[in-house]
Structures are given as structure tokens and as C-alpha cells.
Image (tube, rainbow, N blue to C red; front, side):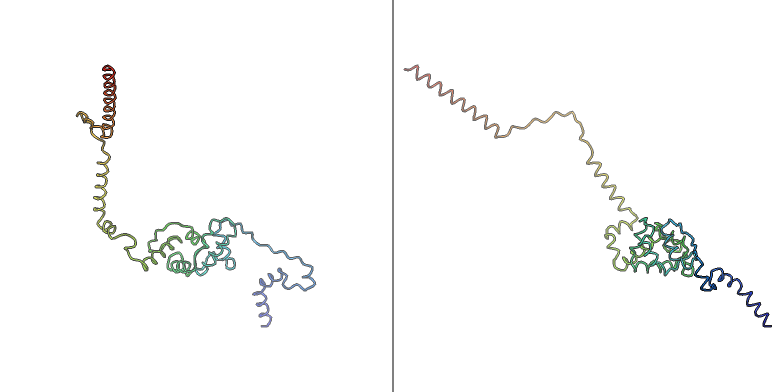
Length: 242
């Protein structure tokens, strides 16, 4: 019975022991001092900055999944920009408050399964610029989530009157009829202003009298000439009398 137990124990642990022996774990000190150990690691040739960060975060598990709670680490590494490409550094400026809101939205969305998201889905979520929500009403991108956060904050702190004036709201809610009428009136007024003057065969209106200043100047010159002629005439008559 004891021998059977020993054989069973050796069989169960044979593979584990062989790996340890191959690694040199059971070598005596004299032999270990003479052995040269070489550690071979797979070279990561990832050139995408987002996938590079996700693989770094998932380095220990190597599950291809990222937990929602690891998002702060993801954004921090994007800020460091290990590949020095500079295309995703801006994501590192996201605040803790924004990260908490993004995490809460992701946990409710269909992207997360048991609090984990695949590398491909998270990369698409970060880089997607679509602001339209999904069928379930949840944002499908990081940009859409941050816009939703701003809108919710605005709803709590402001009223609809801050978005548009009461008159603009009335025009909007009336189906655009009043707005259309106002535009037609404006276009009609503009067309009238742009009409050219009509040509007619009527004679041109006579020009008015010249300004008083011009007429008074001419009269003075005439009076001066008359006076000079009169003086000459008187002088001439006096000479003849003598």
C-alpha cells in the first residue's frame, strides 16, 4: 500500500518536478555556480499607444481584459506616452471626477462583462468620436460620456432659459411657423432695398439758383466796375471844362 501511494505521488508531481529540475531549482550550489542561465522574454512589438498601455496594465494576468477599476491607471499611462507618439497624451488630463463618472457608465453598459472590458472594446470606446448613445441609452464613446456628464451638470445648475431666450423657445416650439414668417419678411425688405431706380422719359428738373454767396460776389464786382467807369468819366469832363 505504501509503495502504491509513493508511485501515485511521483506520477502526480512528475511534471512539476521535471520543470523545477530543468529550471535548476534542485541543482547543488557547486553546480549552480557553474551554470549560465538565460531568460528569454517575448518581445512586444505593439505600436499602438492604447493597446500598449492595456497590455502593460494586463501584464500580470494576460487575460486580454481590463477591469473598470483599472481605468485611472490606463489614463495615467496614456499621459506618460511610453511610445512617444503624442497622439493620446490628452486622455491623461481627465480628472478623477470624470473617471468616476466614466466608470459608472461603463459598468451599466453592454461593453463591460462582470466589471471587465476587452482590450479591443476599450480601445474603440476611448478613440470613438460618435456622440450618439446606443439603443440602451448609454454613450458608446468616451467623448459621448463626457458630454453626458456636462449636460447632467448643466441641468442641475441651470434652467432652460439659460440655453435660449423665451422668444427663441416660442419660435422653436411653434414648429418654426413664426420663424419662417419673420424670415420671409426680412427677405422681402431686402429685395425692395436692392431694386434699382426706374428709368423715365421725364425732363430733368431745372437746377436751382446758385448760392447767395456766389451771386453777392458777382454783384460786388459789377458795382466796382461801374464806379470806376463813373470816376473816369467825371475826370474826363473836368479836363474838358478847363
